[in-house]
Length: 419
Image (cartoon, rainbow, N blue to C red):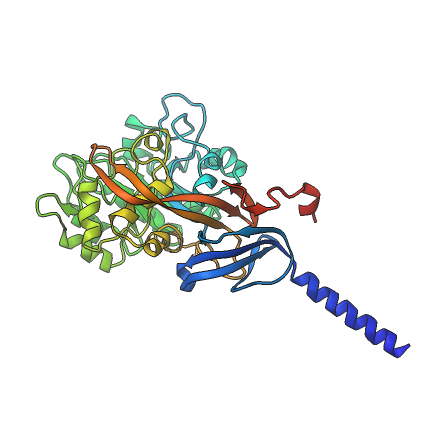
């Protein structure tokens, strides 16, 4: 009798151990690039209950779905920290509750993007509506920089109204919606000084030292960027559209000498961040090529995606990443600027990595070799031999995009995924 009891206990423990080795998804043989953890080699990744449970070579065990990722790159899910997703049907509203903004899920997963940060489309007056319409109806993780203008990106005169900036109200809304709001945004304001930036910085301080992202609309003559970066912004604040060369805005690269200006290097050393924020006319090869050649790489690669930019030179996240790749950044640097670095900028260190215990947000990318053309809004074109493509995206432990059916089985029956 005693032996039977021991045998039963042993069998129970063994069965529990075997069950513990079962996974929902097992990604096999991909080249893992995980900047946070310093991984850059072929490894397997096991996923269970929406989390990454193991990253190692030759993981054994049963899995509901197995993904063969040989000759592909496995990275953390991409983070686009400058996007516009306050889509709606209000006419004459630019990027706030408008036709020009786009719903995230249609354009994220097919690019390996699992997290987007809306760069100021909603303001403190309408963030609740934004949450109701966009955040609550998206599989993509949606965060936001709250516009310091209460109406948000309504366009035209509404974005020039300093009376609609209220740092205390903005901070109050940021605290109320703290799971979603990562900072504040200055967008499109055209004025003779940096007053609106100071309002945003004040809001950031009131809200617990949240960062500020600045896209200044412009001024004639242009306001000195050195003054903005060194005297008005703080450590951790962000200059977006860092490779823009537009009338009314000073650029970071001297267009004559084709060198990064000394104040930009100083600002970086003092902790200011530089974000691509590609957009419609906010990226020029005349700025990006000299900067990258000099080693002034962006801290974050992002799209500024909306219906205008996505159908012109920008296109999508992988297109912007590919441009950075062919301009001279390594694949590892491009991945870092699209995952772990932006996660740190928005102060969400739980994102942007493949750490064990992290939510399973994963991109599986292919580096295509061939002849590819890349151009900016001015018509300047460069040719490249490489282009990034997304093979698969995993969001929260679920395969949400599979380009070529590399999962086996491709579809998991609903009853198999219910607990």
